[in-house]
Image (tube, rainbow, N blue to C red):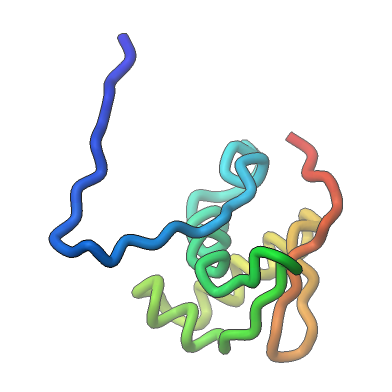
Length: 98
């Protein structure tokens, strides 16, 4: 049975982030890596797929520790989804294996 849901918010300030569906559906990624990826995408430039927030900024936004963000980044980098460049990350444009 399909369940229908409706998104409700208290304010009219509702923004969307562009998140790669193949990443979210990738069964080889942990739920934490998918969550951190989705949070990181809220900082990305949709046109170029890059973002530059600090690990602390992503951790604070996701309400997790910086260590959890770093571990998720490592997992995503190991899968070829993120490329880590010093204090910034760049979303890879390579195809994701599902």
